[in-house]
Image (tube, rainbow, N blue to C red; front, side, top):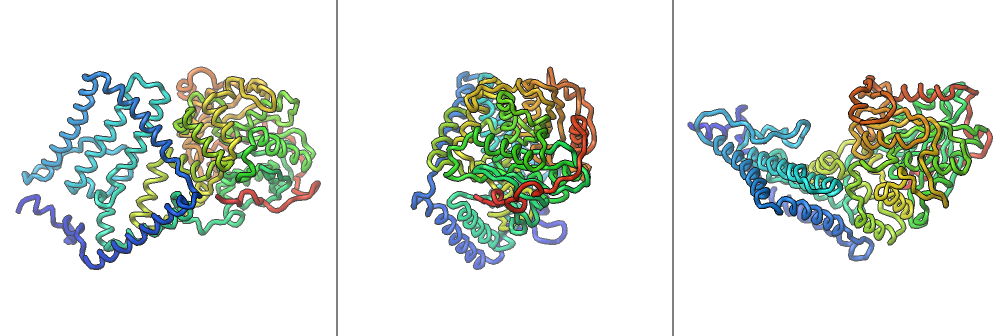
Length: 612
């Protein structure tokens, strides 16, 4: 018997490689296909109904147009020179020929060992782990053809010498999105694992998947709200954001929370945390084991946190000055009222840090010097080498976002959530599309993904100011940002700064944070933590994970600085605590919320519970 015939027999005596892809109960399979079509109709209805009522307007054309424009510029470079175009086509054709030759050799009954792949998946690529991707000639061919094509497209961008950096960045991003979307692992008939599951269940997985799709479109009120976890076990204030405290202040844009002490004495300087408003503050208080807020309290800090409003049409005109006055300065006022202290340590995270930096520059001119040290978590103040979000920012795209926001006074939270998910679509989109809508399986509970899905809206004036002054025009580092009738300069910030970057950050790259350090007017302690934008920050010492790097002043070449930096195992939190105590380690008796003022309710307050 030939090797090709033998390959149809399973080694363990089970179904052959062909039999496992054959429908065993055609009648039941057909019934489930009809049920799937019924559920697909419900999904289509959930999508169409809000549009028919005028409740949803699609702006899909705008990003698609931008992608087409970007690819057109890429094509112009390769087609401008016939020889260059021919060489590119030849490389792709050669790759296909290798894949074809491998496929022929694999199915031929000559007894030879299977050939090596023309191209192998990148390390860490989990899409092709099923043995059938290598064992079955059909799926192996699909895998290799896809990898050859996607690798070739990536190379086209990298070797297009005439592109400006912004266009190259966008082209690389869009190529990655398209490559991730068309992967054979995303489709039933081209994914052996999905194919087997569909046959084995007679299509019941697709019925469940279409039902979930309809539910998720309905939950998104006409847009797909992709579920990444089972959110039902979590409730804010019950098992996430549980550190005890009181709301001590409230404005139209923020609540100020003061937390209960955990030590008999505390640092004399209270700590005010300014989180991003692009998502909710409880990333710093997910659970007792991961909570930076709880840990800081245990180290003796009197912790205050700004909890931003989830804005609606009432907040459309609230810009950065409002967020400074009604958020950050309100926080400073509440700290002073609750503790009597005029000297404060402040932390800003991500865009909350960018706001803190701008506020510090403004307050320096206004003579408000209550903040005596500033810590920035993954914060950009210079946007020359901003992360992948810069893909979405040029004049045309910003103008399109502004038109969308002006209709309601805010940007829908789902739009921002989708943008962030696209930055890591291979991890945050397609695995869940496959698991939910094709395998028909509920995702597992995960507090971090619960927080990630708890999206926030963007107030129109606030978001427009941010996009234009930071990403588009880079006014903060240039010293041309205007706030409250003043032109602010980071050079006016003379207080000590602890500037934390994370090594694998795709939102605020370590290089960008490093270069931003040069604009502050005082001393800067620059530290790089292992991992990325979230895991690198939320890394409690007890976990004993990752590492961090410290070095000299953040000047000169970033690569040289990092090469000479000292690597330390574990969390940077203890290093930061030591730095804070070197600024002022005086201690006083612990302060309990409400002792000197009326409180407005228990932590985590009401604003954080408003969902999109």
